[in-house]
Image 1 (cartoon, protein in one colour):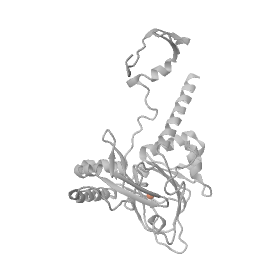
Image 2 (image 1 turned 180 degrees about the vertical axis):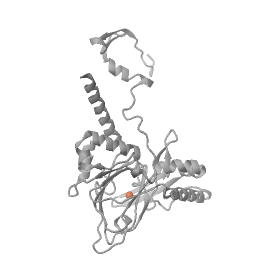
Image 3 (image 1 turned 90 degrees about the vertical axis):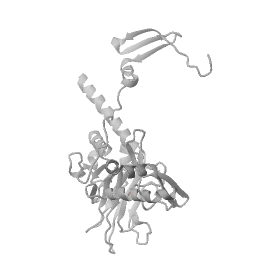
Image 4 (image 1 turned 180 degrees about the horizontal axis):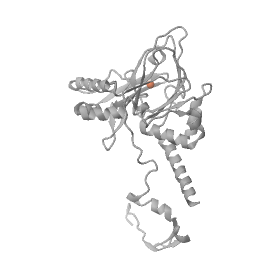
Length: 342
Ligand SMILES: [Fe+2]
């Protein structure tokens, strides 16, 4: 046989066994195989079984998402104890890109408990460590640790592959005005932008902006488009981060102005009142969101001697959401099939 040629083996005989539950195959080269017929039905090329969570598509949303039937708050304990509640919470998170857990205990590292519930041992390490304690520091130069407002952004823009899943556990919130989280659905705004301003949309899908972070022993640099499209031309990732965006823009001079105009137009649309959610986290809340889709920011607040605000934050892979959902869906299907056979 020539190198690279695939040896074809034909079926010599095939017969059903065990009341049709197994198929016995004798091949022309005399080896035998026995296959469960259910398994064969599920692996018929383009007629194969669908992905258990196929059909769950991003549900795009605007400013009123939290008052729509698509959204509800979940209790931390119910999600930790009930697989049905966990599946419903993950499904909402998968479709909307945001979800909130209420009344998580404040004293302990609940992020670890939640990650374990989702099937991972711990959050993923990043430039901020495994858990980041976002508290006020009087002398900090970084806006996260001050009372200043934070512009809408995506985290880890200076990574080529930014972590997709982010969690904020609110341990202490400022009293009085300010400190609210700002959220916008980047996929929804990008789709509106594609319709209303196709030329600027095209520019933002093509120009790579540069993001940098130098911290301790690492100097991170990544170049990423503001709007990333997948092979079907669907929007699959948004990257905006004014704090980490480098002054360097490696494009021809004549394109620079058009790039900044397009970025400004898109940013204006993100901040349109129709697109912006304002939610003030309470102590015990865990806000979970898709870092590739949702832009987050913060309203500033006034700083007094006793003002305190504390968010414990961490990252994980977005695949943890779809992976655990798929596992729970299969578990549900097995359970309902078992009940039908009784
Ligand atoms: Fe952030």
